[in-house]
Length: 288
Image (cartoon, rainbow, N blue to C red; front, side, top):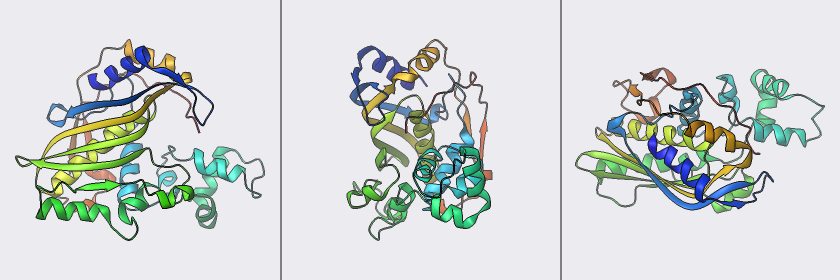
């Protein structure tokens, strides 16, 4: 994962201090690109342990078009809990419940989950129903029927619905590209939280590329990650420096159940990560 560590080093050395909507403050650069050849291994950080279970479940959640956190919390995935909990705390129904109590109610009270677990038309909604268009199905059809197309694009940024989303999409646009029987994917990310978010985003879209390639009978090419505002929050500087002090280890390999032939049929059990030998995890607070 040298490209990621080079990004960290570049932002720490050349980033400008910039305030943000959370009031935390960041070091930030505008415009950066990383490239990952997936034939070299699965791009999951080794300089800290990354919670792959959360990445896989979130991706399956996106693909299914789901926008309620109940599926995630039912599988002990916490990455989206902060935003609905914040909205719950601002409601008349809040009576000093802790985050743990909130999550337990989402798990065990379906009506409560419907009312307070919904994030609005975030990623999954746009992927599967962007103003009536199933963008994922369109891309699958184009890859199969018109692989030289330059229109294999999926957008999560829907200006008409941004105001209804708990969090406007950070990873906003992807494009697929076929050459020499290999499928590549480029992601444009408007806002990139380098310590917490970007390692998840790299692994998530690399995995999506592998899944689409498999169901399209193509080999896997490159994942290209283009960042807009690439930033490190001020309360993550020490964590980034710790990662930069660690020598990256060999990348793991991702094994996918070869019997799955439809993108919409994948389950969590269809993925196996092998030879993953990371350093210990590093904690950092999310800026909400």
